[in-house]
Length: 530
Image 1 (spheres, rainbow, N blue to C red):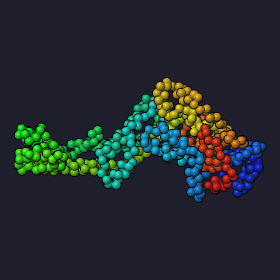
Image 2 (cartoon, rainbow, N blue to C red):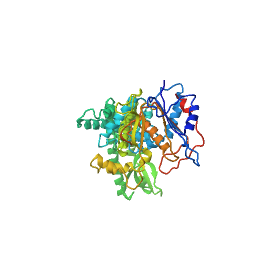
Image 3 (cartoon, one colour):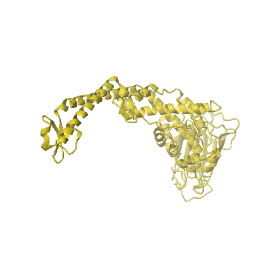
Image 4 (cartoon, rainbow, N blue to C red):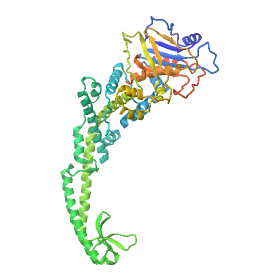
């Protein structure tokens, strides 16, 4: 039999109506200690019967389910996506985005695409990564890492990459390799070799493609964005011939220009280039000084010609041929490197995913420090709770992270002040902004092991919905491997699904006044996901 827990804020009459609308599902008193907490949690709130209110009350449901996905998986996925919006998960992800170090991490957090553990073991792995990152006092250096996904797609399409794009891949490969080197150095200085293993495991089996990085470095000068002579033997020969030819051509043209100057055919000797060919300047009245010369261009006034002397024609022709040959050879080298990147596309994409995982782990750690979060515990899917606690849900002094944000320093202020703090206690003390906003009132949420129904009663605008959203959001944060803004060691069960239907759709902040729904929403839509 599937066990369920329902937390409601309503009158006994409303409970009776609610009971009738659940397809005959049987509920018992919330005080029954013999009932075992199972795999789902429904939270609903309405106004208590003893208060007469002039406005309609809120109807809210939060359902957390650990049941395997059934044939109703499409409905469940749809409700899950809607739940993340209702619980304002994207806003929490935007908080997290301030602590990311790469463009990939920033994009993932801002789009609320950070991974949620799909199993208890996966969430434990994410939490272990966060815990390991919290233990590192200084953030890793992610400089040089770029999101080269688009570049990889271009190479896979068979297109030639530019020098800048190839250099971006090289910088990213080198910087990714630097990440594991930094982690290994930190681990080597630690007394416990396993302390940072969760982070090392992310990158340990990655192929950093050092051979590809060395090929790009051998062929390209990324500082000047040029293909190096050593990239190929043919290119080196072509450039050597071109250099010799240009030196001879320029020397000959300087001599011709000097003779023209001495004959009064120009104000000063001038060797220049027109139409990709080397030439000299000469007054139109002295054109006869260059018999059989070719006029390439003229000045705007028409008083000066730019002429190619007969002696320069063969050398200019050679320069054009060598220049074209050089371009062809450079394109061949760039095409070769592009093809090499295409061959390694799978490894590069895998490496980018792993770098993103490290970035998000350190972002979660920085977020945890920022809000003074604590490591949460969660039960297994079999609901075997800790022997040290009689509660299935045991959370002390938790605060909604969005409400808490206004009473803390902005992330960039925190990163500045952190460097001047001498201890974690100093950091915690400096996190608050005196007189800025009053810190939100902490909430204790405790559901005994065996309790099946919990009734919450209170006036409108009393914080019922915010508290229940906090519980649902805490479950999501736990799945994502995030610390919770609570005290001690909060314990929340791990759920396959977190489903919510909040009637008023109020936004959690310090200034919004809740609007109240007119009617009770049918909970069967949520329950049908089981």
